[in-house]
Length: 387
Length: 92
Image (cartoon, rainbow over all chains, first blue to last red; front, top):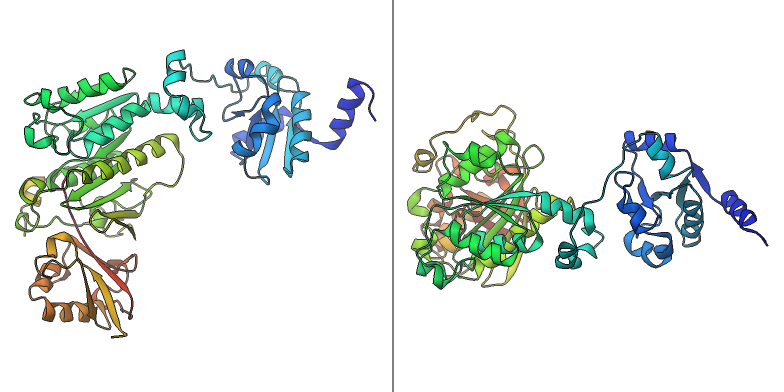
């Protein structure tokens, strides 16, 4: 039995594997998949940490680690300030059944002296910690994820049926910048489904009405308004300010324009479309999955494609579809989960059935195929009148 | 019929199937199946096909696979297969 602290530490060090800082740096530079575990106290972590590290203070290790790191075969490298707490942590992890654990020796103090990269945690205010507390509790979001949401810039095409629920939930989630493109004013007939707006704001431009609702829900969100219809002449100016596009527009010419811009700019588009009782959602990530033209090479002729204005739509339908789109946007920002890339989610509200269909990249696609023929914007109104 | 497939009819085509959202049809290939659908629901072929094949704004899936990436209208159909007709919709 060890009798002193030094006996204890020396025994611990014999039972674990240690890793030099230069070797750790090499592995991070080579992007070797490891889980970097910072076991220092929260205050120490907040003053800076090794990029990519997750924080579980040593005192909470046994209680929290299985929830935060469920894979017991994962390659874990623990570190602390000097290499002692991480050695103790490594021993604990081994006792908990983690099979591939190393302890960095020395630790963060030396790492910083060596001028190796250090990351500062996001500076959430007390009010933000409170507002987003349910997010902060999720290991998949946490402070770093919430900071990503706050830094994200998402463009909503249309502040209508799909844009309404999406805008509200993205604002509530703390997406820091929301762009809204809509040329219309709020009409009484919108309120059956466009929950971003209100009876008291009938007649107001939709982008202004949306700003009122978003401000009231979450003052953290910066609203950027575009009271115009997106077209070939303004799409570059509008798109370039944003990271992700949520397509909730209501016509085919804009759908194809948005697709081509997304392919040219390699910008992800979360697509949602609805008709009467049915909806479709997918995520287009240029260069990775198919694009809208791979799915629908041509639009239907106008007489076969009545709009919601002509054909009607169940008011609740865009609620669900828009929220699925917003969920995809949040996943893309956080880099979590499996997005709907190459998958078309179909929803039939009458039968209450979801379906999933495989989408493939079309090698002959005129926009994203092997030899694209569409390399600049075309006449989209003309293109959609064919047939 | 043991060799019938189930065909999901999207909203815009239900005027041709008397409002039915799902119909049964037989055929060894997707092309044959559409010919048989046409006999029961005249006009449906024209909404799905043009002179070049499947219309470019409609996708036909056997199971979860788009026949454009299989054998097109020659894609085989087995009894019990689920066929989905998925048209482009634009509402938002």
